Length: 228
Length: 239
Image 1 (tube, rainbow over the protein chains, first blue to last red):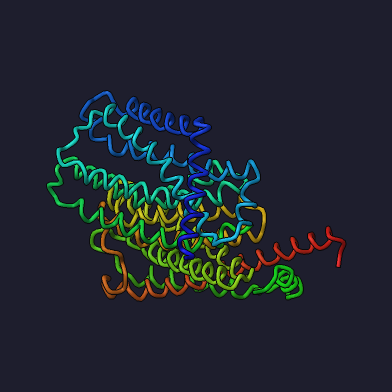
Image 2: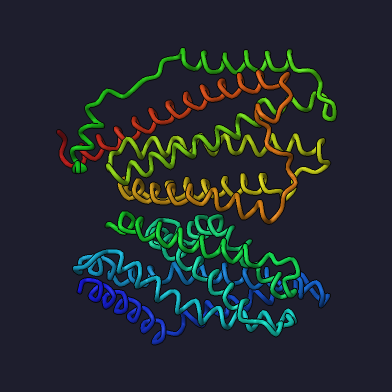
């Protein structure tokens, strides 16, 4: 039952990360507050015209997610490094990809909470009108967040151990996320406007393909990257 | 699997490769000849006049950009597979040269776009994806600059190079759906026959320049690595 053992390792790492965050809370609170702050600043820079704000809402929310998310990813490895815990983690028996999967799962839970706060704040601050058929919007958001977390966790495993982690992670991550940003914002805008052009479907398929491609690629590459 | 000490001995004892002066003369001579041929033989274009002649550097430079990033992909994957230091150094050299050609493509495109379209920049598919490609490889080069350990640098940049190259078609497709304005890309197939020979010759000339640049950059990287290994050996008590 090898896969069952692997799954237990993944859960143990994810639970450890989430517990650490829940006990400290400072990390989550500051990252989520930063997300809301970025939204406020964007509102001030782009407003006060209500229509202009409503048109810019999707883009503003996604930028706030990218800029605050990037801090969360570095944290998840930095916490390990500060307490010298990464080496022992690597010494435990079992395949290395379980470490990546565990970190991924932990970051995904962390980001989901943060996304909920930032999106609600964005809807309120930018006066977004939620259509009656809202579940596809949540789907787009989820697919986009998965893409963000997969590449964010992967690049953070390197950037957090380099000399310039604060600059390096966004520099590596943001250009890679261009398809996610384009697909998520265009699909969300289309769905908010009742998708008269029927274009959301193609963008959603692109997001699914992107997530699958990079989930596979990062799982393969992580083995090479995490070696001490 | 070769251990790291074997690798460093290989690099230390192997005579550093040296490209002489003549490849520089050949490659740059080819560029001068191809440019002269293209400029002298091609008539003024209907809409753009002599402005069209930017194409003879702009288009081949764009091809060389993609070609050198393909080299990065191949040698990154090969490094992860075989773990030979040379593959890493070739990938890094190709990335630097590719970024240079990428920058050249963007600059020339803007100089061409200003009179042709009336603006320096448009958010068109080909322009935007070329710019994103440039940013991806700026990240690759920054990662190399900010990592000290040679093996870590090699493994990390190989992973980033391969995954970055994987993203190129996805970026291109997504930006294309997002917006399209650029004329269909110039290639011998879309071109008036009076312009094709000049374009082909210039592509070959720039290919020679690209190979020459990558080779020289690789030689320098080998020498730098050899110096590092010698300094390490000296610090460990000498050999």
